[in-house]
Length: 314
Image (cartoon, rainbow, N blue to C red; front, side, top):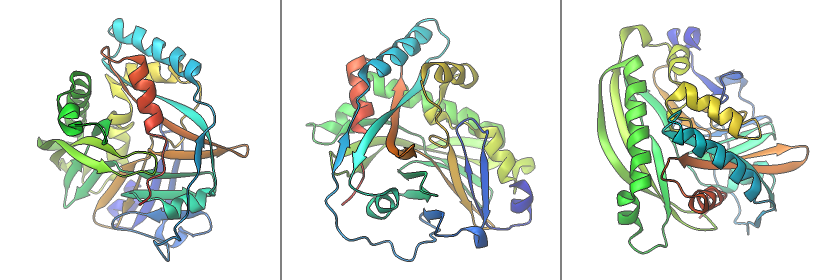
């Protein structure tokens, strides 16, 4: 990736959660038969329109017992001071009346990828953008059902959600400082509206920026290796929290919560691979979760995990 970006050669990449698997595709290697991409600044699809379809999405196993086991393990580590924010996730079996490719075409999101009929995701979350040696990140942390009265005010003032958002902003500001100078928070607690078939949500985001240090300029691979895993889907402090996650979760995340991006030869746009459906042995699993703090209540977190099982269509 460094070699390509130093030569200003456009490419698309995917890095899994544990930085064990990296896929890199030159522009002429991106074939619709195996990889579909729909980013703001890059698409390899002939049409973005799909015929309207009634989407029938069913949660087959809510895995409350499995969720509880990992949740309690995370809470114990939080009590012991091993972490102060842990992003805990589970995989839930679903049934849907569309193929993974049809889900790609029907869903609406800032970032969409379908890969080899193995997985599809429709992510609202930017990881980092690099534009003219300026680097930007947009941590998204905190959601609420939009139908709740005064939902925006409740979200902005909820003690637990606020603590979680402050932690992630602080974490990512520190992360950016490893690769950039003059790091600052440009926008704090912005509220975005996310429309889904099941229920509409509000999500809370912030914007952080800095100027890439000379030794990181035009080195996309080195930047990614330094910043990953993404703080918003990991927690803090990062090394110990990663150990907790690997033990608490009863499955391998794989590319879920990894990062993918498009480098156009000059600038980079990348996203966190969330809102993720994966095919395993002919079954479909939706991977979702959220940040756990010492203030977290089991019922609320379990509900938030389920709220995130949706396909965003208009």
